[in-house]
Amino acid sequence: MISLTPHCWNEFDELKSVVVCKPSVLHVPDKQTATDLRWEKTADSDKTRHCFNKMVDAMSNEGVQVIDYSTFLKSEERAFHEQLINRVFVRDLACVFGNQVIPGEAGTTMRRPEYIHAHKVFEQWFDERHFSIHQNDTVNALENGDVFVLNKDAVFINVGMRSSYESAKALKEKLIPLGFSEVGIIDLPRRGDTMHLDMNFNIAGYGLALAKSYMRYFPVEVLSANGSSYVMMHEFLHRHGFEIIWTDEVKHTVADINFLNLNPETLLISTKAHKKIFHNEQLKKKRLIEVDVDELEAGGGGIRCMTLPIERR
Image (cartoon, rainbow, N blue to C red; front, side):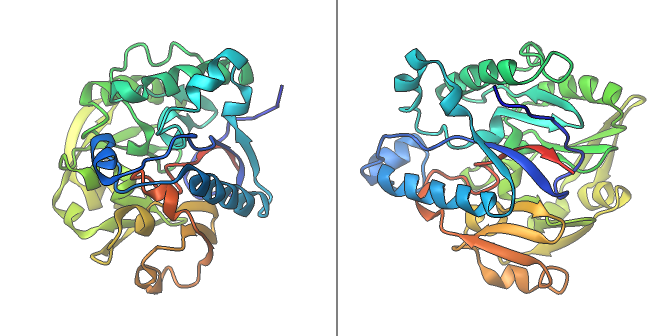
């Protein structure tokens, strides 16, 4: 069994270990099937595997330990699991808050088997001090593409299509004892391009956030041990040390904004990303590692969606 130490207090410290899952063996053969699955376009499974391997190699070459949880499934589960079309999008399955791995809960029944199987694997990996499969018993929908650990004080959550307000409140009760002081809740429009928070917002390093311009108009409910209050989104981010780059340059929601921080200076981005975004004065000094994940992005998720950080230092 592998040895993993959960440790994530933000989104940008050097990535030491990350969980992934190789894509499904199934093709998405035509536009109607893609529409029915809520995919953006068709996909060929041979090409998705190739893109996945390129992404894994890019992280491994930077010294990141990359673990494919599907290789730890029981033999009788594998034939079923490899047919789950969304299984590559592991970010939603759980989140590391400090030293605790808290399991998520699928916001749609189609994805529920992934969560059940992955959480059983996590139960083998982590001792009870760091993970409990029952931590999501009070949660009815919490997909962690909607969750950002801003710092040791604050977590930012969207309650939209796939995560519920009730679940965010239940999560707050677990986070306050871990030392977090505030949980900010935003409620984005219910559309395909706003399915998760990380399709609209991302952290781009220490004290720097990137957000679609329309989010400037949204309030955030701030939950704390003392109750709740409301501020505007930029006020919540500012008081936790983040400057926001507002952008109207997002042309492809997933490719443009769904990147992964490998360390404070380095971003892993899609080759399809609109490069004008990264011409911003505060971003152009970043080291950008590009990887072709276009065939995987057909599923409506990007590099952040396909990676679950376990340890950052």
